[in-house]
Image 1: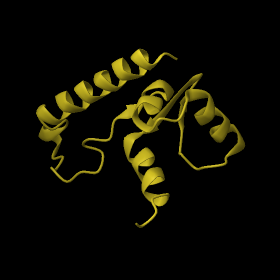
Image 2: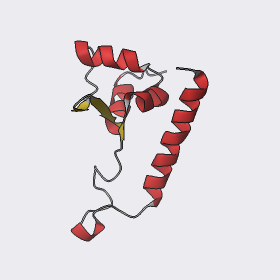
Image 3: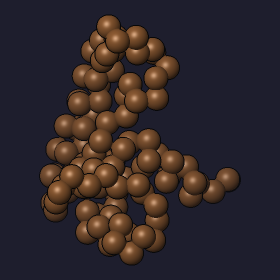
Length: 98
């Protein structure tokens, strides 16, 4: 995908995250708390995950198929989504101390 498409997708993702943070708590009337782990954990498509992590969608697909890394993909028919927290955990596990 062209570099402009990646930037466009990343801006779209950041706007979606910003809008979710500014909205009221989902399920507030059901007693959901501010510290609820699922309050803000958006699911990203492979293209959005590419914009967020820099790994191409094809690379993510191969990793899922070969189970090289446990990105915990969520599959809905042919659609695949990744939780933002799973991608952050994946990155945190691979950070090297300076």
